[in-house]
Image (cartoon, rainbow, N blue to C red; front, side):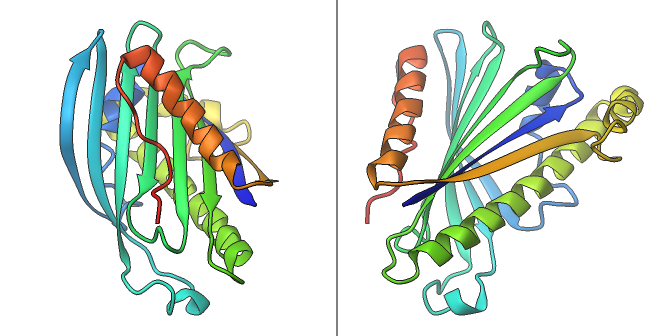
Length: 227
């Protein structure tokens, strides 16, 4: 069974500001686990910005997983499409390391909020799978909790960067966030479900790839690595 969860977050900054700030997310006080980021390719095609990057991150496995996971450094492929006409920014990420233990596929769509055109909504979908006999469910549960914590840190760190880039909106962000999201100026909703069947993660990831392909004319790989 594949573990799936979705989270929705509101940034109290314009879509253009969020997109520009995305490329300047690191470093920030919450990103000590991000060791490096390298751009592999970047091009403009059909008026869309297509970027492929390689991120290097570190993560400490749980005690029971130390025998399964030797290295504590993992490579992440990040592919993204910026569509200024539709005002959407879509990112796809998948892990290159740990694939024999766990695969994680993520898709995040940044779009203009329907509630306020000066806000940006980020909808994140994550699929986590593990084929380790006898430990699959435990690894999936660990993966979900780890991804949730990392996403929360990412949101806080990203808001920190945005507040530095656009200080004039920091006060507005704090005021809007005071209604229930705390001083960090964001709101997050997370839900998780179990998806039966091995093919669900492939179908979901393939659907995301097909959508990107139809819009950009290129293949955006978000399939889990095969081991």
